[in-house]
Length: 109
Image 1: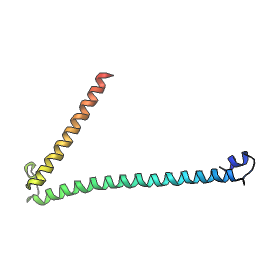
Image 2: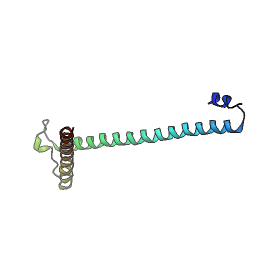
Image 3: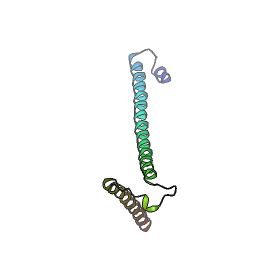
Image 4: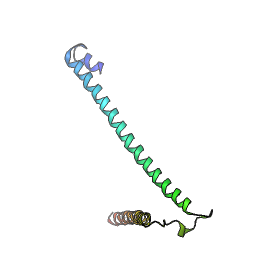
């Protein structure tokens, strides 16, 4: 930045000071944006881990023996059961649609 000011004919003029100020504001804005992106990502990762832990802990508590049977994985509470199947169908449909899109893309190209 100072080399730009020197090329213009002096480093103490008002225009050069404004250039430095703008560059500092841009750097500050980039840092603020980076912090926001990092906080959003950390929140997403934390919620994903938390939801997985809640599902597995509730499944382990519902199982009386050490072995986890496939039928014991489904919650017995009607509301949790509905949410469980909703999430499962959502994951399966997302996987199916992405596979169909990938197949369609390979057929087109």
